[in-house]
Length: 77
Image 1 (cartoon, helix red, strand yellow):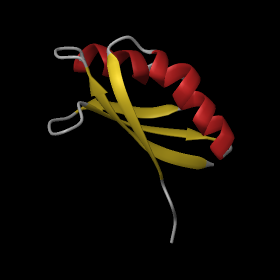
Image 2 (cartoon, helix red, strand yellow; image 1 turned 30 degrees about the horizontal axis):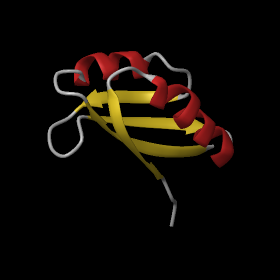
Image 3 (cartoon, one colour; image 1 turned 120 degrees about the vertical axis):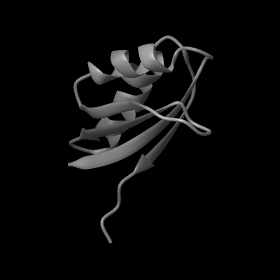
Image 4 (cartoon, helix red, strand yellow; image 1 turned 135 degrees about the vertical axis):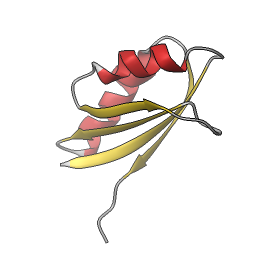
């Protein structure tokens, strides 16, 4: 399994709605509102890096209210 943190910036006042919508997407482990330069942080997993990319582009980025995402794959050193 490949896991990643997805850091999300949203439109003003949309963080809670974005987190709630993303939490329902299969493959999303957690979606939480946070403070700081990002508004929502998501932890997601998929079988391969390609499937993870499709999850981000086809599902997560389609949620209304998102302005920018940054995907950070987890590495095990």
